[in-house]
Length: 61
Image (cartoon, rainbow, N blue to C red; front, side, top):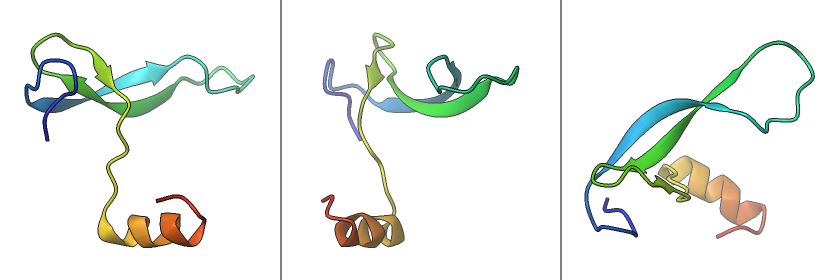
């Protein structure tokens, strides 16, 4: 999979999500797809076949 910005390879980085809406003291760490060339976060959903089936049932394709 290539990035939208530089068309370079994407890598997965786990980062702290600052806006997860929780009032507890725990950090939410989530995986992000990041461009390996410039470091821009790519807002791309990557789903396996089972997840795609569930998303299509919910109206999202």
